[in-house]
Image (cartoon, rainbow, N blue to C red; front, side):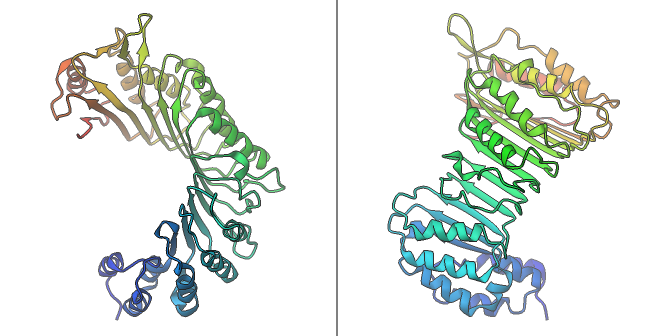
Length: 406
């Protein structure tokens, strides 16, 4: 008799993970899960986690033992997650990776290596072998703080690629016959717009500028200064120009100054006839006047208005989410003289235009504030404006204005 899925998920959630140091974990999981449905068994054995921070010299041998003595592991395991940070990483982990590669079962790889400085050379070699396997091609790859040891990875089979804080661009392989032509989802999180642009250029070069299968794009630039604002336009244009089938776009910019984020940074969305979801997030929007005094203003929303005005009626846009994050406010911070409701009203009218947004059903406005007045009823000039926005019903389809918790 099968266990109900809800109970199975509850039991699975309390069982020790495959990477934990527990001598009975494998036997316990095998016995308990023997009555599970195939779906529940897959959830339990799908992923293998290797974390070098534990400094366990027997980790590799235990992994090999589990791979050899548990049929369910070999049947359902498809995902490898590995974190490298401990200089005492033992060669046994490399041996376990080589053993895993011979099984030809891994299809997804998540990597976070904080330092290869003390890592035995066998470990990156074993990882590269897994990535370049022709028998079990990798379809999903997530790299965090990546280094230059993966130039030989196989790209033709990838459907999902996530690059987080890349240290160097050499992890993106040189031009190949197939490249990233089958990539369906791309997530790029970089510390600067210049680095992100360079990474995108290499991606497009590797794919011969053919990313027609791309369905979802997430671009997150952690810090943008005055010199890099114009790069944002070329960055988005590079990808969007070859991704005409895009259905979801998420664009997050960590602004330090926003004086140049105007019309010159807007990219044309009129040719994207399949885009259904759009999320735009801005941070630290601040303008400095000639006297060096800082105040906040609504430049991000001017940019959003210009962007949305490029949308054609053929786009089946359904969901739009706008976020203005990390907005400090207190009695001593002024709002810009141009902070009026004209842009907000124009946005409201634009979203309500059914001739342009026929399918639009959800608009989320999130303004997260922080500072010396963190409570549910913000006071002062900024708080009054937020309350006025809510009272007037601007962005009437959906609106949420709330302070950041302490």
